[in-house]
Image 1: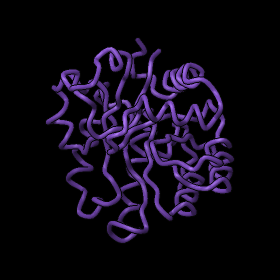
Image 2 (image 1 turned 90 degrees about the vertical axis):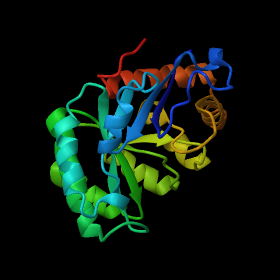
Image 3 (image 1 turned 120 degrees about the vertical axis):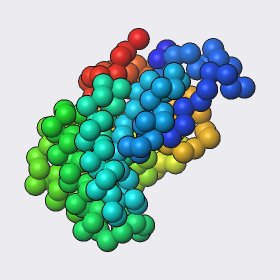
Image 4 (image 1 turned 45 degrees about the horizontal axis):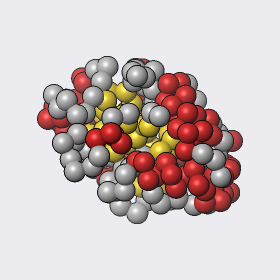
Length: 226
């Protein structure tokens, strides 16, 4: 059974105390800041990356954005982000929006999906999506919102990634072919997250894993499916 963690900030080392047999069929997409890619790209435990500028750090981010544009074509970078908008933390929303929109354009230019961080800025996010009409998938990472918001986002074509904290009723509304799992910054294992999501959806872990593997294959074409 192949498992995919599409958004983590620190993939486990194969030399960790965990049973290696549980981890041998897990693929991780490690999220890094542009300069972080330079430090992490030669780590054999990190074969795949998403790379972008988080909205919290979007002020005075032009040098990082320039560097992102230089490296984002690397085939190991399979997605742009996490990028987005946050009304609770970070600089003025207009600053965040400027950096976010440039990453939207980069996603479209390179034909790589966009991993999105959004907090209390859903109307603004939807406005930008309507404005750009992106062809690349937009994935809301760590979705914890309510059913009504999930339905609205689904109607606009968003995909969803779920970590250990989720709204049971909301994820029951999300079609399996729009769903991923992630660990983000949690110490909870991706295996446990798959188990909890499968339990909530009243399906087997095998069924969930099989569908997410298909979703990964469709959404992240640069990521090798072993």
